[in-house]
Length: 128
Image (cartoon, rainbow, N blue to C red; front, side, top):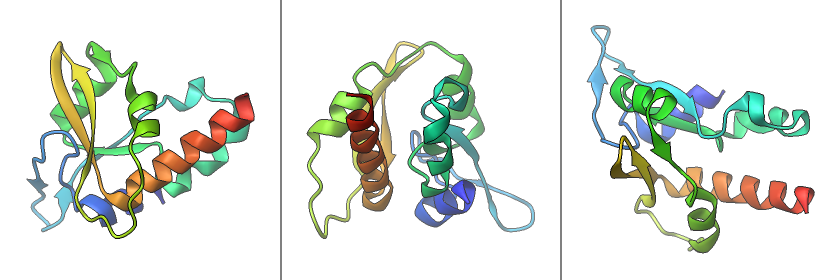
């Protein structure tokens, strides 16, 4: 369900570099990567992933950098929290991170961003 959500939102366009890898069968290839590693989350949160909030649609290179490379996402939550949800907004919403020492942006569709922001706000209230 997560991967289908990402496919609907991004059609295989990498959320970081916007690259599209066309498969020989006509579809687009992408990797669904978790923002927060699921093994680091409390069990009560793991049933919420079908909403797509914890997933990213990435090309193989960006997926490898995100999974295994040096990254700084320490300001991720603060950025998400500070960006208002504007009804009818249609542009991508950008969250800045650092991969391999370079500033990059993760682009979110408004629907995906709302799911992310809602989940993070909900979980922050549960943990407080």
